[in-house]
Image (cartoon, rainbow, N blue to C red; front, side):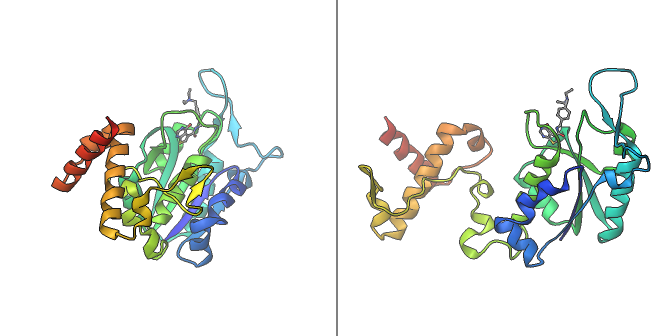
Length: 245
Ligand SMILES: CCN(CC)Cc1ccc(CNC(=O)c2csc3nc[nH]c(=O)c23)cc1
């Protein structure tokens, strides 16, 4: 997969392109990662990328031409059919299903805005879809673009080893994760649940599933609404509730 970002702060993206699972994927060539800065496509002395909004109001709006030229440069570098996504508070909510969908694309161009946003005519002419990562106000689209990059790269074949398989990502099967423990067995008087030390893999599987179901019910009951429970899951959830009472 090829990914290009269009942003005034391309150096921010090192957080995903140079670290961790995603950084390794880039290093291994499983994904190529490029960036284009609209400021490099300005032709005035002050390298102007923004201007005052027509109709008045607070803040500034990003100008069309520098963005359009940066996107054109990204298109020229990528496989012909690139999906162009604008990160925006007005976008549809990014979720696991969208991450899976985008991971099928040959190439992605992610456009991150600053200021109050971009001229609507740029969206009309260049953007295939707008994505938001949630209902809170960020200072720009870069962090949202990095969230999308991270979630999409994890879904690419070969990125996660078998132990981290994308299918086991808890959001893949619609449940929150169970608790995790590692050495020491007792820390400041707090012990690891015996079941996890038992070596009884079936008992451990059931315990983990019970915890995942119980925590999902307690913290994110909305996730259970869209999910049918198997007979075993119903039994385990009932057991969890009994143990809580
Ligand atoms: C809330 C929209 N605007 C109120 C008049 C102002 C505004 C706030 C923040 C931004 C910058 N945010 C993003 O570019 C952004 C891009 S994706 C995203 N997802 C969640 N929250 C976000 O703020 C974003 C742009 C305009």
